[in-house]
Image 1 (cartoon, helix red, strand yellow):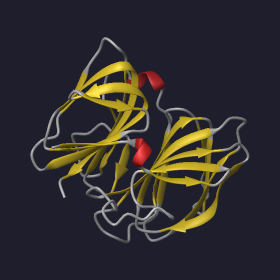
Image 2: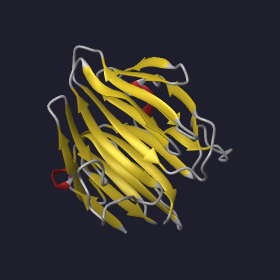
Image 3: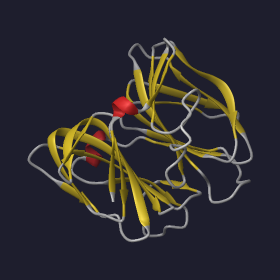
Length: 235
């Protein structure tokens, strides 16, 4: 089963300094039929103006991955971490028993990044933070592993999260194609970050998404297609 999601029909949060597309219910966007997809609770596509950002605020019992699309993302938290990431780089924060953090754009250009929140397999983990500075070329033509369950010994993903989830990124150029199998008992959520592709014959544009349940997809780019996929147990 495949369900195409048009970005023009997503929730929005526009606040001058911030322009967000909400894939699921978040903030003032409330849709009781669109709360989560399995353990995936939040995918926010955030555009943050220079010199602004999210002030220090708390989280608990959530696995949070941030994927930088363009610009600079500066993170600071109550564990003492402070880092700045750029295009294609990733940070991970396990909020666990509780952590406070801020996310700012101290650069000169607009920051675009994806916030991804995943329910952990249990509550009460110690808070944790990490970041990974992938080169952009690492994802060209392949599904580059970003994150996986801490129990998945077969995965080479550097980010290890407290959930049965696998996260991949890719950049596929015209003239190439790529498949992604979603086996029985599994489902996946795909985000077209940039570009355009036909996925199982369905046109998917920048910021569009797709729910995939127990089905293999074939990606045929019509222009360079930069995508993220979050694969998990069905449910």
